[in-house]
Image (cartoon, rainbow, N blue to C red):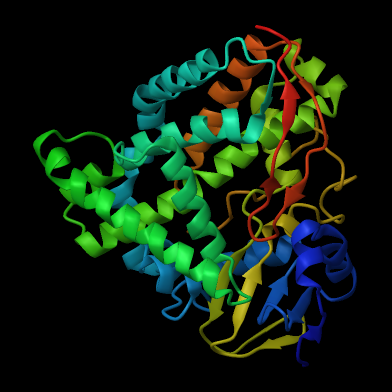
Length: 388
């Protein structure tokens, strides 16, 4: 048995484009220690898929982890019965039935209003001017924090995302994250009495009525905001970019030979909005001949797993016609994304089809830079709408 191979990364370059280094790891050291991140990275799809389910070793409970320190101990940082209990309490708000019968109509209304507000505009940033408010309006409804504007919802989410990925220990990033969590706590306090008087399907109401402790309610709403704003925002804009840069595939969707859902699912495999999930090694364990020490930190690299060449042919290419049955953009184990149904509905049933229906001549108007490795998406996306 042996210690993990050591692979160094240049953090700035890794943030700009992690895929070359991740491909090197998959090929030569799929279980590798990265000193700059202070973690062992698992980069092959089958390793991630199998190990994520082994919660006795790859534990989500990380009392000293960034997310727990910055946001409180939410259900994503719990295992076994405690995790399942809080997940069950959340389910009435985000179940496929609730999404279909309640949230979808609201998603359509908000998205239509965002599109109406763009009328007469020639050129926009699709990230900031469309994907951001569409995602934020949906999240305001789902969390129950309708007292946060879309702009503030986006800002606090970004600050928390940056904080949870702040493995370099930037003090300014940490300070912004603390300010964001304080703003969310204030919004929760302002809404508590209202949802007690008029219960709804929002998380604040559903979790409170289920008897969840207020500290856990706060932590789980922050979890929903950290995962429910930036990722749908980035996937809406990113999938639109993928289709606009692959016009033959966009034509297939428009002609009914493929679906918006296929377009989104392939984008989520190709450029996983959630690229990584951290775990704590809870017991001595050996995987693929590599010893993993208790209390060490492991990153399950979804963004790498979804480009595993041994699983996906032409893994670096966008091809919405491929079989994505083995892709794991939402995770694979008991921590499978609780908001997956809401995300799929918002992105593939509402945001994408309504955008391309309203603006059938939409086209790119400049470069579209991407950033991130723990969370990844387009930073801006200039487009010409071409009239509606």
